[in-house]
Amino acid sequence: MTTSTTRPRSSGGRAGSAPPSSTDPHQDCPLCPRLVEFREAQRAREPSWFNSPVPSFGAADGRLLIVGLAPGLQGANRTGRPFTGDYAGELLYGTLLRYGFAKGRFEARPDDGLTLVDCRISNAVRCVPPQNKPLPAEINQCRAFLGATIAAMPRLRSIVALGRISHDTLLKLLGLRAAAAPFAHGAVHQAGAIKLYDSYHCSRYNTNTGVLTTEMFHAVFARVKAELD
Ligand code: SF4
Image 1 (cartoon, rainbow, N blue to C red):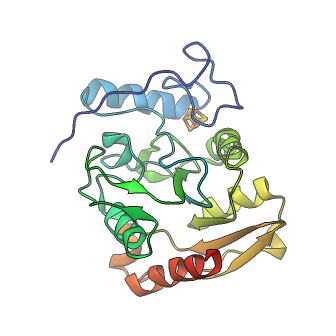
Image 2: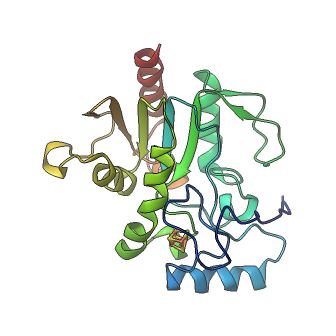
Image 3: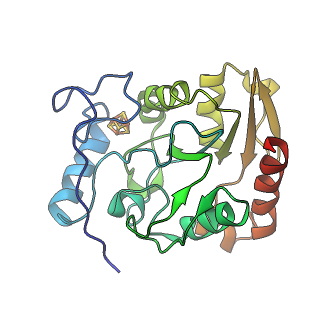
């Protein structure tokens, strides 16, 4: 299924000048030349796709933030909503519905009516990277947007990091030392009033290879739910 989308209007600043304090980058954010080139090529190849930095999904007053790696080429990069349109979203949204962090029905379309409850979803890197692999400089460059996203959530108490890259970039934002907070599936790290929960990323690769089972993923969110309630 192909979903046509409309790119977002600017969230502030003129084209090509996204201020680092924005929670969502400008649609033409120029900060990562390699990703800009990839974005432009995708816009030419698939003009009906979103093909822009993907904004966070969910209200800023949520107590839970989920941080993935980056938009998938045919997932969020196509549809414009995090984890929507490829396999990773099936497991993530199914789990959020199961534990009361989402309402409605997930149909892998941004207009499926699904809403998040007490929860927001974002990515460490907002633009789709080639082969799903952002470069360290790109992760560093995009961290300001994740930092602004966190700063704009006044009730935030729990963050789920999906994968090691997400975990590492969150450590820098939360002021935790890597040696004191190593990544491990199911690990929980305290950063002031915020708990950081680690999970393997819910990618098709991880589930197909058995690195992550549905039960392992559910266990992370069951714990988040129990500790928030
Ligand atoms: S990855 Fe982030 S910082 Fe880099 S171009 Fe995209 S929105 Fe801008």
